[in-house]
Length: 432
Image 1 (cartoon, one colour):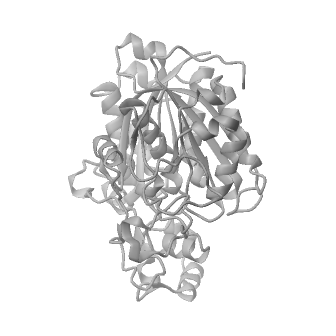
Image 2 (cartoon, helix red, strand yellow; image 1 turned 180 degrees about the vertical axis):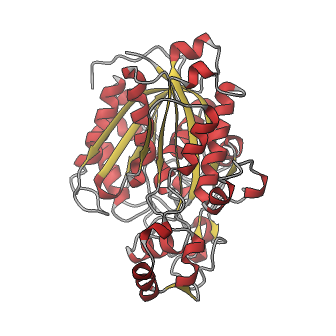
C-alpha cells in the first residue's frame, strides 16, 4: 500500500499565527480564550471565544481584484495565511509545474455564509433581532449574502500554485477537517493525485454563530472564568467555547518526498469515517458511530489498538459528548485505555467547527515531533463518567509513535485519522 506523508504545515489559531506559535502555545499550556472583540457581545449569554489575536489583513498580500472580498471574510484570510505557510514549508518557494499538474486540493470549511458586516443592521444593541433578520431575508434575494463564496480562499490558493488536479470542499461541520485529510489520503493511495493541499478553515465568532449555538444550549456561559471556561471532561463543564482559525498541510507519496529530500513531518497511516445520524446535536447513545470510525481508522492503518500512544480527543466540553467519547474509547481500546493518554486541545483553543479536525491534526503532529502529549487544561474536578487519563493541567513528555485524532460532528458525522512517526517501519498488525 502506498505510503503518504506530510511535508508542509501551516496553522492560524487562537494561540497565534504560524505553526511555531501554535506549538509553543501547546507546550506552554496557554489558553487562547478571551473576551470577544469581533463584535459587541455584552448582551449575549456567551461573551468569550477563541479569537485569532494577531492577524491583520493589511499585512497580507492578496490578488488585487479579490482583495476586498477576501478581507471581508475573516476565515478566508486564515486560509490564505495557513495555506501559504504549508506550501512554503513543503516546497520552499513556488510549487514545481510538474507537481502542480498532478496536485489536488481537499479542504474543509463552514457552511455559514453571513459575515459580521452583513448582520450589523439586524443586531440591535448586541442582540440578534429575529424579526429584522426575517424581514431582511424576504426583502433581499439570498444572492445578496453569497457575494463571497465559501471556497474563495481555496480557489485563490489553487490559482497561485497552479494546482490542476481535483478540488473538493467539505462542509460536514465538526468532522470536516479530519475528513478532508482522510479523503486526500485515499486519493493519493488510489493514484488520483501525486500531491495534495489539504486543510480546514472556519470562523463562527460572529453574532449569528454565537447566537445560534447559544440558542442550542451548546456554549459555555462561564464568562467569568475567561481562559478557564473551556473545560473538557471536567465535572463542572457547561458547554464548548467557539474558536476560529485554520490549518493546512501538503500531503504526498513517501517516494516523491524522499526523491526531493523533503522534510517529512508525519506519516498519514489510516482514516475511518461513519455516520450515525441519531440526532443533529447528540451522539448515538450506544457510541456506535464513534466506535465504528475509530475501528475503521485503525484497520485502515493496519495497527492494533495497543499500537496507539496518544488520542487527541474530540473533547468538546459538553455534558453529552465527553462521557460518550470516553465510553467509545474504552470500547475500542479495552484494557489499553487505562494506559493511554487522551487530551483535548479544545481546552486551549476552543471548538473551531469546520477547522477543528485540521487544527487537531496539527496538534497530533506536535505530539509526534516534540514527543510531548498536549494537556487538557482547566480540568480541575474529575467526573465519574470521564475516567481516562486526560493529561490534566500540563503537557507531558512521552514516547509518541502513533496518534489517533477524533472528530465527531453535528448530524452524526464521525471521522478519525491515524498519524505516525515516518521513521517507524509500517505496522502491519493482525490484531485489529
